[in-house]
Length: 333
Image 1 (cartoon, rainbow, N blue to C red):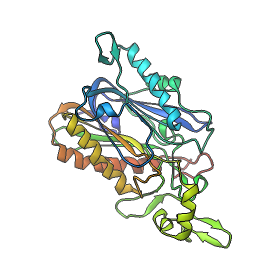
Image 2 (image 1 turned 90 degrees about the vertical axis):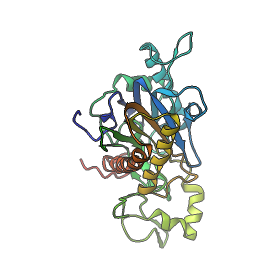
Image 3 (image 1 turned 180 degrees about the horizontal axis):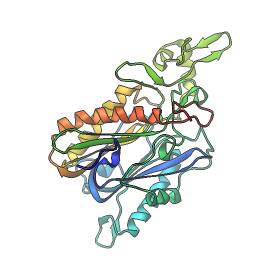
Image 4 (image 1 turned 60 degrees about the horizontal axis):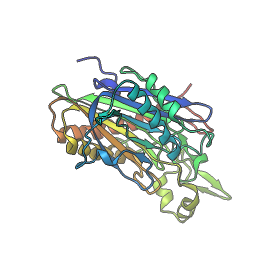
């Protein structure tokens, strides 16, 4: 087996490319599967922005995807998928419709309009560029691609949050089966270490007159704030709609469409382990799943480890993020 890099691209046949505008603080990440992979999706939270997710569910005809787009720009950013379709069409890749190849490119967005220039968003040209830059080797994480404008801990609004980004993780779980994840973390809640349950990135306390909301520590603790009277009042105008975690879990195990959707479903537990709270009405948390079908695998085992790699990818997303847009990040230098 080839050397593992703890990245989504450890799975043969998957490429990852980023494109971003570092001044506007937005970008997109493209995952290409040129030979196709069985796709699935599980969307949770109350504020999603997606494209081509219905066809991924069981009882629909198309079962393989050629690319997935994770993008900033809120619903405007869905335009990036058009650039990916153009790129794949030029390569002769897509579903054979009888009159031409139609690339199957699901997409999901996060809301990053509140941190940079809200009038510059990922578009078709940026999606096309991300395809041109895609690699099947090592790729950067943090403030790149869909993670360029990502942030966490926004119960007091954007200014009291912290910078996040995009992260990845991968592991071999026996028999040559690999499970990996890629996630852009733009959560309403705080990110916690699942082993210690301590916050590592999240909302920072705010001074409201004589009252220091959120306690005296480094972090306010979103859960504690939410149950307070002040927190309930603040949430009505400060929190929405600047959130959503979007990502991908992938495996080289050979799964059908139902099993691949189950993989997406189980992987959400990785968000629940590391983001407190997850899946709120302020988040549109969406996870795609991919099965490239190279190895025999058990969905229960792969799904269980998908939780672990998703949690690892979330931690990587905040640990790889540098300060930007007035928000502090954990990555130094």
